[in-house]
Length: 180
Image 1 (tube, rainbow, N blue to C red):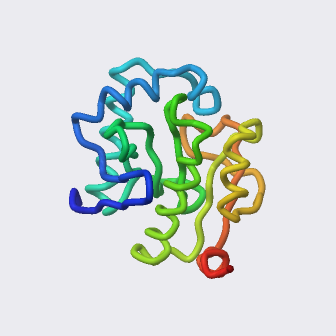
Image 2 (image 1 turned 60 degrees about the horizontal axis):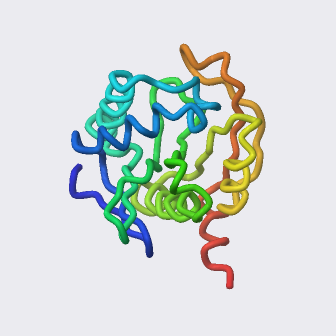
């Protein structure tokens, strides 16, 4: 599990470690970042969220990656596959610290994750669950070649969150990657 690492031109993506808690807590504790995700979390809840993601790696063999900026070695966000119990479909999602936004990191990391889920995990389709008001994530989904599918209902305590699925098939992704 810990040997799964993806690299892009500017980023390293790897499973979470205990040492990632500082970045994880900053990300999940930021009110602006968490606007569409239920609100800022205290450090203790951020730790539980990180442990849940780490548990996904143990239970399913995949989960969101921690994203490390190669140039600085800094933890800048998380991105990757997600499919917990009751989720509407297999997802690739992303979240980045404020200082890492606007640099194309979300698109770069998500593209590496799409390659991973389609080519390594063998997924046939993928969604991105996005709040309808989150225009920045809509743009990332569009840059990835995903289209709006429509509203989805998330499980459990997230049921009331406004959510839309954007997505595409493996064949659509492959065609896009092979286009000149």
